[in-house]
Length: 124
Image 1 (tube, rainbow, N blue to C red):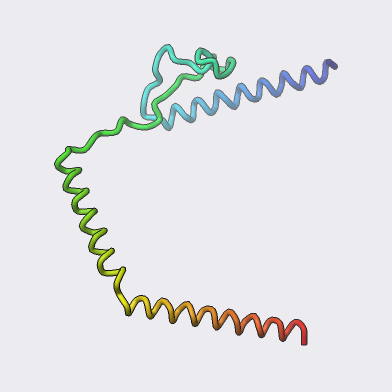
Image 2 (spheres, one colour; image 1 turned 60 degrees about the vertical axis):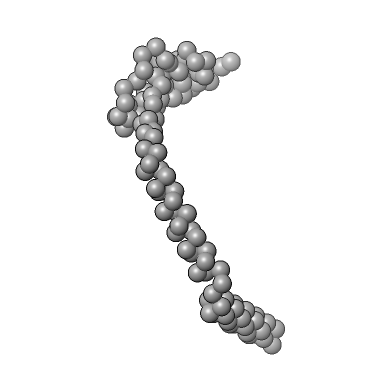
């Protein structure tokens, strides 16, 4: 391998290590949780060394808190009630169905007229 290529590769490796160190610092600044001791990126077998030595694993999201069963049951009952209300009112509404059909017919008619005008202007 030519010495200039080896130098370029080492330079790129140093740049990547510097970038990884910067990413670690940014992640650490944005993460409210402390890193867990003893867990490292290299120890997990997912990568080699970095400029800082290791990448510590962090908990990315807070622990989910389970709601009280009573509150969950009340919320589910309310959601089912709202869904049933909308299903009953929207499913059998002939006025809404008529308006939708008229809007669709109007849109298709306008699209057809635009197509005929386009063909007329292009070919005649």
